[in-house]
Length: 166
Image (cartoon, rainbow, N blue to C red; front, top):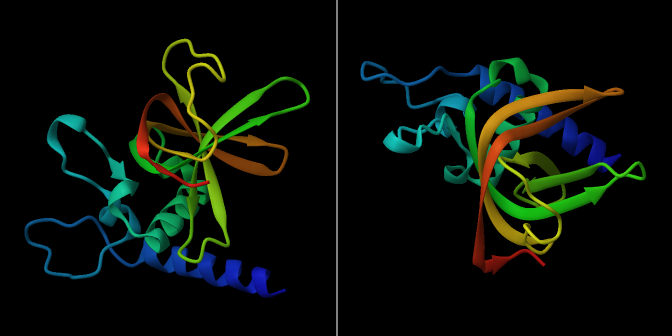
């Protein structure tokens, strides 16, 4: 019951944070921004629309929550995220690759699936499970049964050999 309450509070906070502000402009003097504008990046040549690597764990989790439940607002946007690598294989042979995002207490995590650009085979072209990676790709989502899954398409992956989440 405690976890359900925590998830409900987190969900409410995410909704409040995403609805409180708008993207900043030079004439905007408001100190409070929505999760999306806080994650937006003006990195120039990278053209990253949403850089989750610049947010603290609470804001990342809130942003990902919003991406799951308001996916149409993010379709096609270039997203950058960092976290431990995860892999899952279904009984039917389908393989899923994800970067994990946790909240501040690390009790709740959300995987953002990614599909690398080009041809890749597991395990040869992927890091060890738990290895820290940074993934950049185009946001998309799909529904399967009653669940919504976020994914980054045409993704690029960088492996951080100095960090591991084992």
